[in-house]
Amino acid sequence: MTLDGQRRVRSLHFAGCGNLAAVVLCVVLAGCATVSGGDTSPDDPFEPVNRAVLDTNTALDKALIKPIAEAYRQAFPQSVRDRIRSAIDNLAEPRIFVNDLLQRRPNAAGITFTRFLVNTTVGLGGLFDPATEQGLPRQSGDFGQTLYSWGVDDGPYLVLLFFGPSNFRDALGLGVDLYTTPPALVVTGHAGTITGLAVGTVDGIDLRSRNIESLDEIIASALDYYSNLKSLTRQQRQAQLREARGLAPEPQELTDPGSSADEPPK
Image (cartoon, rainbow, N blue to C red; front, top):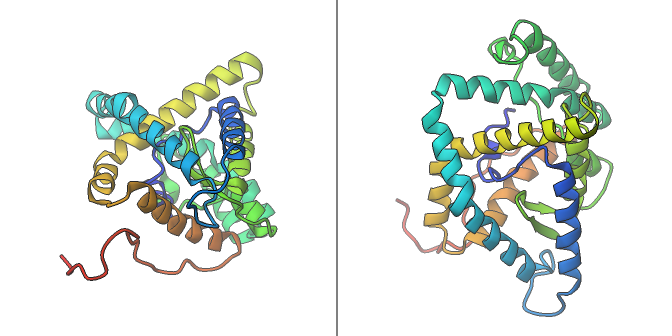
């Protein structure tokens, strides 16, 4: 299963800002601790804080991230952006491989290992993706999935600053992933922090540039953007979690929970 579709509603994820992720998580959890009562659902007890963080993310995206992504798309042709995307994806293959092993998915781990070998050599350091052309699709594999395969519950729904929709388990997994994805393991010290920040920023900008229209459509069509985004990301995440337990993804239609059941099909 490829990962491109699963990224569409998480294009504000700046993979690589490990220190920032830890700080953001602490701030969010501290803010959540001050919220009590109110009209919240059992699976989303921190909804007021989550909505405030989502509003902040949306404002930052509108003012800064989206314009940068649009400029990036105009400055570089598709062919160059595809090479950048391929190289960044290749950097994550070792982390995916380890998580596939931890999830007891030997077939996925074998595919990931072969992909990394082929793309790093024949693909010139990951600039190209001949592995996919050879029938070796990119696998999912993150530490949040691994925790799920070990029986760790989701925990409360969270919206993280910059990183978007998540939950307590996946937020912890994200922190581990950020610290275990090259170049964080290859370049150490201050240089490693700067390199990781640069790679993560380019990663986030590239993903945002690839999803400008799709995210605009989600925002424009949703009656309640918060509820719609939560529903879409949970449905997409569930498919990845099924993979973590070696189950085939269930085909499903992504639905807007705010849409009217009586609305005629378009």
